[in-house]
Image 1 (tube, rainbow, N blue to C red):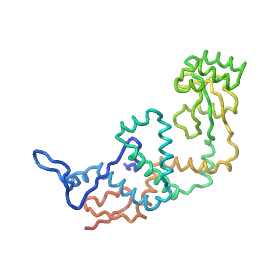
Image 2: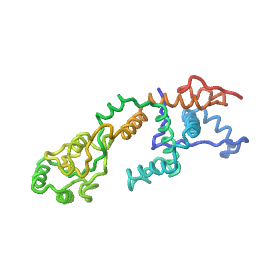
Image 3: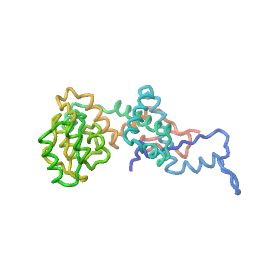
Image 4: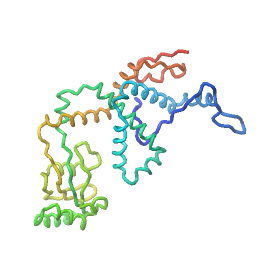
Length: 296
């Protein structure tokens, strides 16, 4: 089974710094534990080998693509996650034993690997056409969620008398059971076709709406029945107008493809001239390159 290089945001790989002389890591009534003893034990474990793999990859990626990933890029990615988790962000970090700086290091590693994917994956016209079929531009909607279909139908009748966003927002505050959005008139964060949080039927109905209109039949999901109002929908337009967005979506998809990552990482490591000096770890990269050299 192929190991997945990308470290999930819920995980942190701790690196071990070993000095030339073996310092004491811990003392006990039965004797001391030195860094060399700890290292000898750690390198035999799968987790220890994965730490080394990640460290090697990060070094090679930094050399090749470090100038393409700025602190500003990392901060932007960090802010996106912070916005996504909202008030629970800090607790999520704590639950996963992550500090702010450690998480940013993970994000940087991810962005570096993304640059490697961009550099090694050729985006063809057929790939663009295929992505265009599912592409939808970023839209903004509001919704009213209720538990019964009949209640939703009654709300739609009220909206057919006054279909303004002002009235929709008022009804959302009064009748919606979605506590996270009702205070804001049912307004949701903007999303496009790559969104994985919203129900597929909800997204399909939302993308089909013209700006300033609402669904005239209730949209059923596992949460209940929704009435959706389109606040902003620029329309799909022509494929040539969205080439940059399509390429970004293709790269994002490739970043989740293990076969692609395997190929890209192999190319990056071979180019990095990696030489494993510890004979016990000479095969640590065998899943990615045909052979690793070792020397004393």
